[in-house]
Length: 141
Length: 216
Image (cartoon, rainbow over all chains, first blue to last red; front, side, top):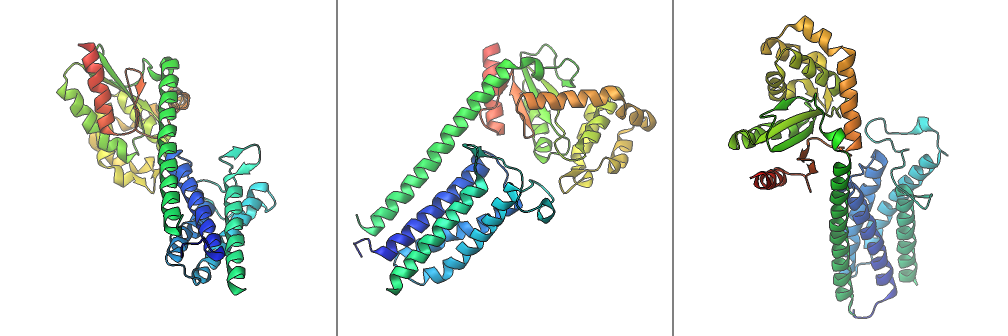
C-alpha cells in the first residue's frame, strides 16, 4: 500500500479536485457572501458528497467507490453544463428554473473576462469524471 | 510518502489555505469598510434621522435597520440597555434600510408615526408582533393595521403622512446612504463613525466601550 498506484492516484486527484471545488464554493458563499442560486445548490448537492465518498474509497482503497461516485459526478456535470449554457445565453431565459432569490443567469464573479463560477464548476466536474473514468480503465486492465 | 501521509498533508494544507484566506479576506474587508466610513461621514449622520438619547452624548451609534429584520428586533433592546447603563453618554440614530420586500412601506409608516410623536412605541409594537406581518421574509404593511391602532394614533393622518413624497424621498436617501456605506445586511452599526470589525453584540459593545473610554 505504500506505493502510489495508478487507480488510487486517479481517485485521490479526483478527491482533491472535489475538495478544492467544495471549499472554493464555501469560501464564496460563507466568506465573500455571494448567495448561491438554485442551480448552484444542485451542483453542491453533487459535489460535496464526492469529497466524503472519494476519501472513504481511498482508505482502504475500494474500487467500488467508482460505482457510487460516477453517477454523482455525471449528474453534477450535466447541471453545470446547463448552468454554463444559461449564463452564455445559449439556453433561452424561459427555460430558467429559478424564479426566487438569486437568478441563475446573474454572473456574480467574473475573472479575466470569461471565468465564472458555473464555468469553474463545469471544469471541476469534467476533471472528476475524466479521472474516475481513468481509474476505471486502469483497474479493468 | 505513504498514501495516508500524503492525504493528511493535503487536508491540512487545504484547511490552512481556507482559514488563512478567510482571515485575510475579512481583514481586508474590515479595513475597506473603515476607510469607506471615514470618507463618507456625511452619508452616515443625517440631521433628520430619528434619534434617541442625549443629542450631545460623546458616543453616537448609527444603526441601519429594517423593522422586518429579526436580528434588528433582538438587538434593539440590547442597545437600549447599553444606553441605560451609560446614561447621557450614548446617542442612537436610526437609519432606514428596508431590504426586505415590502419593508419600504413599513418604514414610511414608522416615519409617519414619528410625526405623531409615536416612533418608539410603533417600532416596539412592530418588533413585538413581527411574526404576524413578516411572512416568508416579506413585509405586509396591510397586516400592520391592528398593531398600529393599538399604539393609538390618528390613522387617517398616519396614512396621509406615510404617502407623503418627502417621506418617500427620505427613505430613498437612506437607502442610497446605505449603498454608499456598503451596508448590505441589517442591523449594521457605526460607533462614532467606525464600522464593526465583524458582526456581533460583543464587537458592538467593545467599540462603544472604546469610545466611552476615549471620551472620558
